Length: 116
Image 1: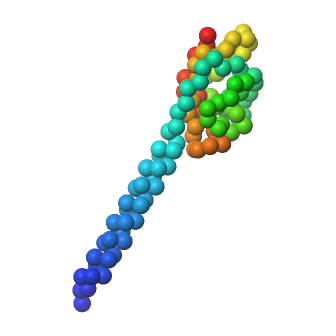
Image 2: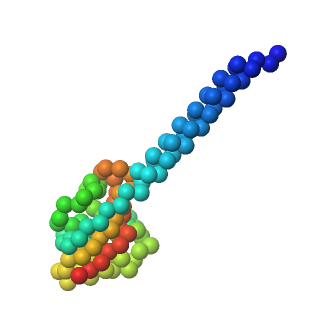
Image 3: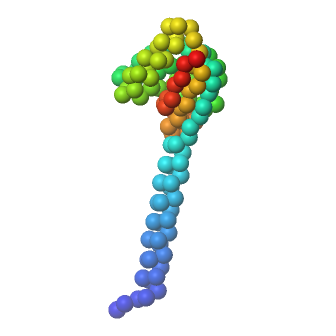
């Protein structure tokens, strides 16, 4: 025997779950795309963690980057060379554009690095 009210309740439940799932994915994707710009940054330390280089600056960052580090993607060797050149020459980075990967106190990744 077919019970129409149960079918409607079941469809509403699945529709609600689908909307909830899509909204959670949307919030998660939005949280991962937060970008920041900084200017006139003095490099204090440079290092490599596994295959990924990173640097730290003296000035306070707008984002709460984990350990105050900005990581350079491993495949961006030219960017690492530019940061290293700025550090060795004692020059500031005139612009750093970076993303915060997963909310406060997560990794920050450099996207653009300019030297003065």
